[in-house]
Image 1 (cartoon, rainbow, N blue to C red):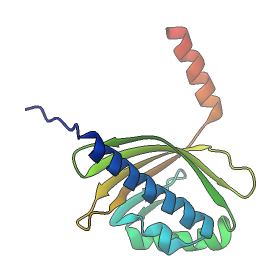
Image 2: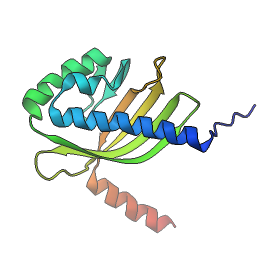
Image 3: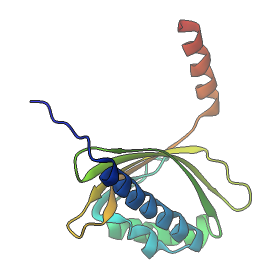
Image 4: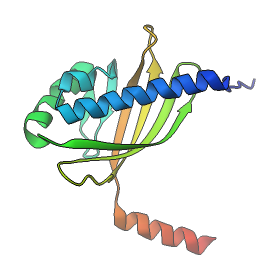
Amino acid sequence: MQIDYQFPEAIRQQNDTEIRASLERMVSAWDAGDAAAFAAEFTSDATYVIYVGLVYQGRAAIESGHIPVFQKWQKGTRMSMLVRSVRTIGEDTAVVLTEGGIGKRRITRDKVQTYTFVREADGRWRCAAFQNTKKNALFIRMNARATARTR
């Protein structure tokens, strides 16, 4: 059986717009140091994995885990995010790839993130799974050279 997940363009664009609005709310919440608003963009049972291997399970843990982040470790930082792709899978699921970073002055997008969004019963798109990976510039250059040699 083959399933075709092609949607009419208007529906795809609306989903894309709503998902991007959620990402914009995340950035705004980060910039404001608002752990509750940041966590509100995640499902109640979301999985949140940061590049050092720390895992938060659930919206409440994401919120409580970000309180010290915003009050201590990353106080006053801002977030920069570039959306690379939004890919809808089925009617109520989407995978989003971004590049981002945080900082106080100059912000380097030194991480790659994967977000899995779901449309919940209330019709709102929220993130159900997040994975953050720090870019390794040396490995990226080495891989690019190796790939170029094999072509």
